[in-house]
Structure formats: C-alpha cells, structure tokens
Amino acid sequence: MLIAGNWKMNGSLAKAADLAECLAQQRLNRIKSNVRVAVFPPAVHLPIVVHRLQQARIYVGAQDVSAHTDGAFTGELSASMLADVGCSMVLVGHSERRARLHESNREAANKYAAAQASGLTPVLCVGETLAERDAGHTSEVVEGQISAVAEQVGWENVCLGVIAYEPVWAIGTGITASPQQAQDVHAGIRQRLGDAGEQTYILYGGSVNAENAQALFAQEDVDGGLIGGAALQAAEFLRIIQLAEEA
Ligand code: PEP
Image 1 (cartoon, rainbow, N blue to C red):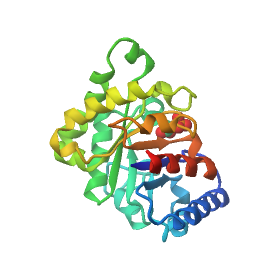
Image 2 (image 1 turned 180 degrees about the vertical axis):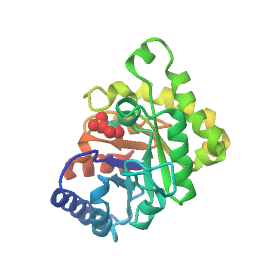
Image 3 (image 1 turned 60 degrees about the horizontal axis):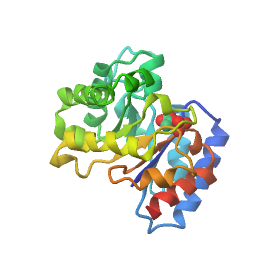
C-alpha cells in the first residue's frame, strides 16, 4: 500500500512545516508499518518539508514538473531541480492541470519521461469526466491517457511508476467512486500493464477520507490512495494510513 497526500495550493510555510512535523513524529513511532507514505506540498514548501521528514521514511514529491531539462522556461521547475531539493516523486497529469491548464496527454508523457530521466518516480494521474463515464468511455479514456505515456517511455517504464486513478467527478466533490467502480477500473489498468504491472502501485483518488477508505482499500487492485482535502489534517491523514495498514 502507498498513501499519498496532495496538498495542492494550500497552506503556508508554517502550516506545511507543522503538518510535516506531525506526520514525522507519528511515523517514527510506527517504524514497522508496511505502508509507504508520500506527500506532495506546494513547490515553495518542498525544502522545509523534506527537512522535517528526513528521518521519517516519508517520500516527498512535487505537484508538477517541467518537461524540459533547463533553459528559458520562466516559472518552470526541472526534474533535476526537484531531485536536488530532496524530492523522490512527482505528480504528472493531475486532472486539475489537464482541465484548467489544458495539459495534454502528450505533455503529461513528456513530463513523465523527464521525471524518470532524473530518477524521480512519476505518479501518473488518469481518470474520466462524468460525461465520459456516462457515455461509457471510462476505460477508453484511461487507457488513452496511459498509452500516451507508454508510447513515449515504453510499457516497462510505465510499470516502474505509480498510477493514480482519479475520476474527475470525484475529485474535491465529496463524491467517491464506489469500491466496485474503483476496482473495475484498477483491474483494467492492471490487465493492460501485463505481468510487469503486478508490482505497480495503482492508487485510487477522489474524495477519499477516513470514512470511505477502508472499503476502497479492501479491493484487490487498489494499492492505496492519492488523498487531497483529507491529507491537510494530520489526524485524518494518519487515520487513512492506519486503515491501509489494516487492509
Ligand atoms: C486529488 O487532488 O488528487 C484528490 C484526490 O483530491 P480530493 O481527495 O480532495 O478529492
């Protein structure tokens, strides 16, 4: 199991440091935990969070990465810069970036390749809109998003990353996919990855909280969660980690 917290554009330096400190203290008491934990703070908070989590075996990642290695890309952060400040992971193709910043499958694929080239583990976010689900296009959309990356880096490198299935209609809405809906999509992804995908983490994301996590984590192909809103409260996030430990 892998439990990842996407802090999005929330908080302040002091709040990020406090949250990290709180998670670090709790994790240090649970060194035998079989659950991996990652957090994705805003980029400007990465160094302090890395510093606070150094001893706690919690991975730190960025929420986005440039597809380029360096040069005249004002405002962008390269994968090697993120690695340099202590990141080991990065989100790629989050639906908020796809929808609001018009990030295409091809851009996500380029970012995924850049992340892996610098030794970061990309977390590829995929998922359908409500209209796409209602039209029966869920698997086609998800498969298209993953295949675009596979075309760029090969299926073996897709299997080395993490995939987060996040139905767009479930993100930040309080509506979660049912455990069966999540399992169906996850099983389809696992099947598409083939043998090399048996060890690939396939996370579910979309309004996961301490109330619904247990049923989602009980599904065979749900290997943990990408948590947004519920990751901003240490107690709730820690409870979700505990539910993953018990799953
Ligand atoms: C997310 O941002 O990836 C997410 C799943 O958010 P939330 O849990 O708030 O729906």
